[in-house]
Image (cartoon, rainbow over all chains, first blue to last red; front, side, top):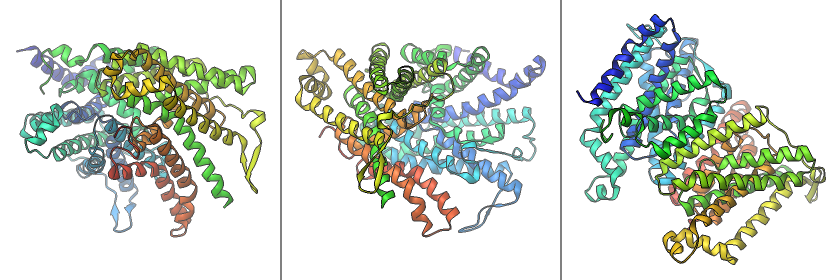
Length: 327
Length: 304
């Protein structure tokens, strides 16, 4: 058993027994906190698919997170009230079933990613960063101006979605659901990264011109990668709506994209488990620093700069060793 | 008609602010190849220092005179401590490090000045209004802002085309190694260019003080618009920054003012206002998308 498998098994066991641990310590808050960590981990892993493996530095990932979150919230609230979402050109009713809403949220996020990706991927480098940022901010202002759905203040979900066999309102069951979703996503991402598709996308990161010369339609590959990443963020958004039972434009704000990016870097870019560690590290650090001071960002900012300057491989690279280049 | 002229002037004024921000930033992007998210922080520092000094001394001019060196010096210190180490790194590192800078500066202003926004008064000698066209009064302060912007534009043009430093900056931009080999002190030059950029950001900040509330995080909203301007104009191009800034300023202002009126011709007022609000807030981004499809490198790209 090498360090890597040891680290992963250890982490998995810790996450599995966490609710029991929380019960033993009489800290039910831990379950909520770790649900949040798992959800952000999902968003961070999805970003890493495109950032670490595809080499696309997007600063607008929170947009897809927010689209997924809003889709679920808006449809659930209409479902609860029994009012239609759309009356024109055709009538669409609301719904509260997770099995229907969550795939729909994923689909809508993927759609948004397809449009934004198709435009942004016309450029690269610095342009790409600024353009993804600007489009995300456009969606942010779009939701701010949606007065019907709370505008700036956001809107509350009356109750978590329903799912046969699982009581989402129960924090512990919800935690295990998040864990299952994250594990499934990690497994699929692992398969994807090591598939032919994944190889091509990684090839584009190394040298796009060469991949083009080899005859790969690189734009299409990168776009599909962008869309998959967006879809993953949409799923995370669907989960966060249910976890907090509240959405606001803040979910899409560009600082949120920045935070997700920080999670990826902190954990270890270009790995699949790194972003999970990064999400845990960042959120736990926020949680702990905010106990001591409300001005925790004054420490986090310089810390981040130091990490960038001196510790490129992230926590995962540090724990697991190796090149950190494999899922 | 009256409303129209007024809104055009408002658009110009926003455009000038954006020009001050984007002229400095596009230089940093174009010459040093560094993506700097923290540019808005220097705008914020300019505004805070300006507001404080103005409140203490009662003189807006002194406020401006304090804000400019404050922003420029902070910028140069940040360049020496942090950014200098990032020139050879990839854009991701630059994004993350400057994101860290934003967190630091936003929190720092909260610690020093508190969470309550500061408000600056328009100086008495600019508090009135002027009739540019008979029958259309317009606040003198905003006209002064436009005038300062034009002046800065002219000075920048002269700096780049008529002076030795400007020539060296252009040389450093097109070929760093060659300029260095010919005896230009590139490190010093980069620090100066960065300082010039943050000076302009500080100027924009202190001039925005009497128009907007001075608060922590105020730099971010203008930063994103600045990015839009730079993408539209073309990275590294000051002419592009000017064109992009005026375009974005006008589209944003006119969109907000006239889209509701326009849509009311076709829809019920409540519906029209809702749609117009969404459309207006998205208009500059749609403009950017259109420019991207048409000219991915921007309207007036810097080199060839």
